[in-house]
Image (cartoon, one colour):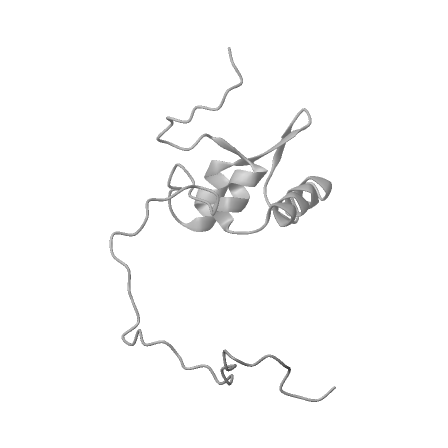
Length: 116
């Protein structure tokens, strides 16, 4: 048996890592760990429902789906996940360059425009 993650999986696992649960909930990794540890410290009274398997903390998928009100889509798309570029892009109506307010320096000027 290997410990490699199954990248071809089409359905979510029964227990998600804290990072995966954070991505589903769209919260930060640190906040998710804080809430999971709070759940474990208060024996389930507060925080994000979590189970400890040895030193590992896992979040039950059924809890997340219950809280979200529907199934979790898998794989989880995060900001780090590469996505295909858009087919079309929206460009602004006016593409004219803005004029600069700086005065152009004359090309034959050898000295500074002010006295030292």
